[in-house]
Every structure is written in structure tokens, then in C-alpha cells.
Image (cartoon, rainbow over all chains, first blue to last red; front, side, top):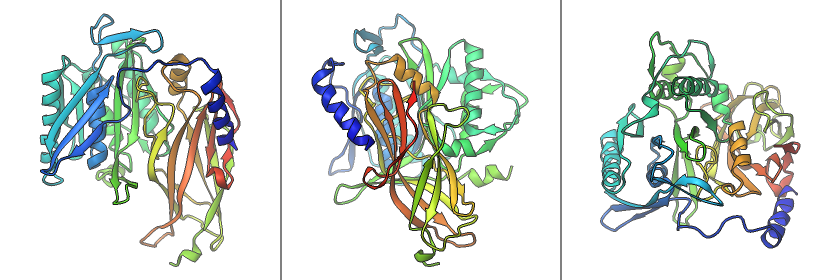
Length: 267
Length: 164
């Protein structure tokens, strides 16, 4: 019934509502990933965040846990543009990367491919990134200057994973003066699972964030974005997925368990 | 254990919002069919297929509006025949983003997660898939939100309209 209401609204809006957005720039929602007969992979992205879009395509293809972080841009950065409909947004652009399929599922192969993508990006775009290996299953794609390298201190109170991520972001906000929010849809596993971090010293926000997510029963990945329309940041956390297409073109989804979960429960 | 002992379907009841999440809805699920007693059985959610979100545009921020929403890997233990809460909806920061970026987010829209549910009897090695595709929908209208559970063709259950 709700769908019918939505459908009627959409049809009416198509004819009666003012058109919200003009045709734009060729930006796409998802990257296009193609494979040549020799095993060469090409990933084409065209987005306000082309490296993020490429990483998303690679994550889904291989079921890898890869986090992505925007840099902080200055308000007069030439990487920011604007128009009357969308306000201020990242210029981004088109990025085509090439690499060969991983030979196996080792983290060495994942490192090789992520470095190849980031090296290709760094030769074409002004903003430079690096590949950080965080654990046996987690990699971060981070700008060379990263807000998440900021040292912060967290108490040892027991909280849900969601509340602990919020606490880290609040501490980061206090330490930097840059407001950081937690967006997305509610995540039941992160509400259900408890964590208590026990560190006497201040540590990089990145390390604390990834330690918290390492307590989740399934692998979690995050995207940390800079909003040029206000200078704030946001983090979104989602479950890592691998998309697997069968011969009929139907896509099934595989969720990856966290190999450290049982260990973290016994601490 | 034979599938006949397990539930064959479920029925949701929409409650209010979780305490810190005024834009979400808590659903309580009652299992139907099977033996009728599933005390301490373990329910786990997965994704039946990729999620979709028509709120997304080429300019929306993926930290607030993920293009492909997913299940959380949530786990619940059945009490009698019910389990939950299964909370569905936007976090407050995303609603604020939607409110402040009308030209960037495509409203009205529908974020859909294709939840699959399996259930495991205590002491039994393999779970049983009792719901292969249970859509969770977050509808965003110009001034209200509504969170729903279940297929439209088969008794979709929705929470109240939530103003934002």
C-alpha cells in the first residue's frame, strides 16, 4: 500500500513538481568494473569521489574490507565547485584504473592491487592518498594528511559499538574543532555488541575506530567524508559484502565473518 | 533437524522508536508454524541480494546516504516465539543531512535492504533459512519518514509516519 502512495507521488511529481536537478557531468552512482580475456581488470569511476567509487567496486568484487577517507579541503580549495542546485561539492572527475586479477586471496595480493590503484590515482589527481594495512583483513585508503591520525583519548566505559564510534567522533570533534557525525541506517549488530577500550594513553582516532569495529561479529567497513557545504565530516559504517553474479546475471551477497570476533569476546 | 520443526513464516509488529533514534522503528517478530516453541533459538540476518536506495544522487554523500544499504549481521535469541527488536530507519545525522540538502537527495525515495533470516536450534550444527527475502524499507517523503518490514505483496507492516 505504501508503495502505491509512493508510486502515485512519483508520477505526479514527474509532471507537476519543479525539476530539481539539471542533467549533470556524467557522474555515475557506481563504478563500472570490467575484465578482459587476459585477466586485466579495468575500473571506471566518474564521481565527486572517484577513488572512493573505485574502492567500492573493488570491495564488492572481492569481498575486501577497505575503508576510505576524504581529505579536509580548505574552503577556497580549487577541488571544490558549486552550483545553485547542489551547493558546494567536490569536483571529482573520471578515473580509470587497471590491474590484474589477484592470484590468490592473500593480503599481499590485496596490497598489490590497492597500491596499483592508488599509484594510478596519485599520478592523475592533485590530492594524494596512501594505502595503510591495518590488520590481516582491513586496509585504509587515507589522504597523506589525515584527520584520523589525530591523537585522542577514550575512557574505558563499556558501550555499544555504535556508541563507542560516536564517542570517538565526539573526541575527534573536541580535539580538532571539526564536527564529525555518524550517518547511515541503524545497524543492529553495532547496537547489540558491547566494547570497552582500555588504553591509558592517547592514540590515533583511526586505531581506536578500527579496534572498535574489530569487535563486530561480521567485517565492517567505513567511509569518512568531508562535506564542502559546511566544512563538517561524516562517517558511515556498513557490513563488508562480496557480490557474486551467477550465469543468469542474478547477484547474491556474501557477508564476511570477522576472524577476530571470537578472540575479542574472550578478552 | 527437519525443516518442519522450524518456523515457516513470521509476523511483525511495529513499535515506537528506539530511545536515541527518533527516526527509526522497532519491530518485534513473531514466528509462525513449525513446532511453535523456539525458546533460545538463534536468528541471524543476512542479505538476500544487494540493497538499493533511490535517495542517492551523483552528489549525495555516501556516509549519510549509502548507495547500497546492507543488513548488519544482527543476531537475536528467540523468547518463546518472538524475537527482536529489529530496528529499521535512518540515524539522526542522515535525516538532518536530508533536511539540509534538498537539491542533493532525491526525495521522495526508498532505501531497501533485502534481509534474509536463518534460525538455529541450540546444539544443532546447521541453521535453517526460514525467510529468503524479507524487504526492509525506509521511505523518505518531503516532510515525513516511514519504516516498513515485509513484502508489499504480503502484508507489509509499517511504523507510524515520523515527521522530520
